Length: 407
Ligand SMILES: Cc1ncc(COP(=O)(O)O)c(C=O)c1O
Image (cartoon, rainbow, N blue to C red; front, side):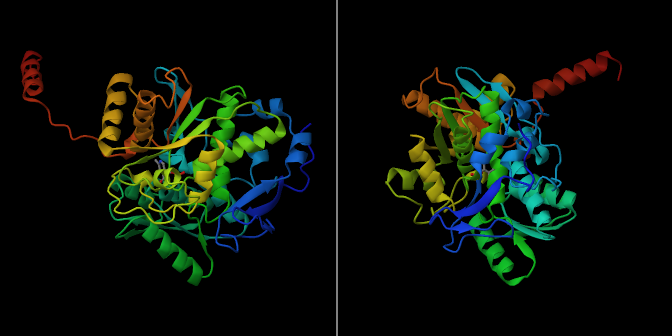
């Protein structure tokens, strides 16, 4: 029976991902003492005894059906904008597209920010700061607005205009930075170290965005009837979703809700920024040097040295997965092809996963019959679409029929 959650959440403590050091969870934390991400640990034995899977599955199909797996106290009201369960769209062969573009602000960043902003409010924070390739800033701005907080978004100057406009629309302050997200991150770290009260929401620099992203893994397990797909293709920038999904699978396994082989996790990047692939294939345990020069136009993977590099590589090894890189041209071709042939509008990051899957099938790394999840991490609408110039033939046809209808 799912009852005895008297003390609020099932969180037991936070744990340094590098040293295993235990930290109390009842106050605000950034990185651990050794400068590594902190992971939220739960009393899984108590969860196993308490939780009724069927009861959870009978709830409204949204992110909050997983409330027991999240760090919010039972009394804490989540900051929510309607985080629906995202669909799996069959796209031929064994491919299923997990379409995260259906979430508030049009991207999977909503999951992480819903939890991180809820926790920031719980701890009394009112001033948030985030470095972003765009989507995380849009989500922070929206959830911050819903929570009545001030949000400061630091984003590279060349971030797609529509996302910057979205951030401004939600009332956040935007700071456009010459450089990449790592420069934005350094500015945010410097400011949050000096300005009292500012709360740093950078990827993995606080423990709760990861927990929100974890719901992607919980949702997949539910959608596949507790027997997971063969392989997952995920566009990896900071890697929060990649690490979060794997964490979800471990927790579910501990509860005995899933068993058997877990999916192979494939980290997808582009040739113009693939630090994970290089580190993994060189047998390194972490990304040691920032990738340079970053030339890719795919915003979500423009992260030269992810803070969670070590954790991403651990997941690649533990899942017997691999890292794949595609060219920007392959991304654009995959995006155009699936839009025109199947009616599916992928973001470039999702299209990168589709292109990576095609390469892997051709190379025999993924079987054509295997069930493969392609993560479409955002809606394609946020990406500048092709300019449309009417052809001479189309103009002539319109003119002819304008005449015929007497206009
Ligand atoms: C659309 C999209 N896909 C993928 C990513 C990378 O996400 P993660 O940090 O979880 O690796 C981002 C991050 O900016 C993004 O906006």
